[in-house]
Image (cartoon, rainbow, N blue to C red; front, side, top):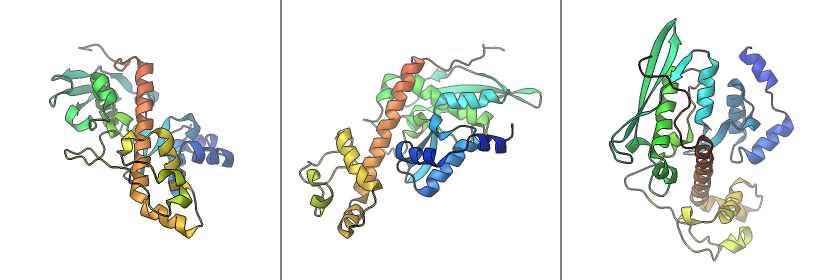
Length: 275
């Protein structure tokens, strides 16, 4: 089946497009939504299958997938001959902790091995955002190494340009991390969000989900009132920080669910040593 036929079969109706905009890609601009749908179509999945997730990093659209999707893409080529269990060195959670995964692929009737190494210092997110990393260090770092190896072995449309949540959690990590705080909104806050004026200053990460969602809605709504437009502009950094925090929480929930589904085990596909 050609890619063109796949795109035709997986076409998105206007109603589905609106549903995707409301539920899956709520922060997408028209161009980003078009690009996201195109990414899904050219890889043979429908956006509503939720195999490719719409996320933003640094204000730009970045497609995110689960490790199972990368495995699936490699398997469908018929050339994936196995994915090793991660080989770990160093003590878990220490700076020298690493994971190595090897992917075997049939290339021109020869067996080629593609090895990749993931290092704890490069992937573990900042303190406070590392719940699953502290709980399951082997599983988390092992997934990063596997994703790296799969992209090396299958760099084209199979897995190229696709990243898993575990690889992206460290984005923005710094040795001198600044904690963003929720500033008490100033006038005209009574017009836009009267309940927020008395909200105390605290780190965005400590705000409850309901408050974050209410504030976030101000980002995606269109206002004609000049005062409300001015309010949005003056609080842009804060609203962006809130959106980023919500995205982090969504990814962590996905990680919790994925870890629960997998039972904390390594990748199921592996080849015996020496084969």
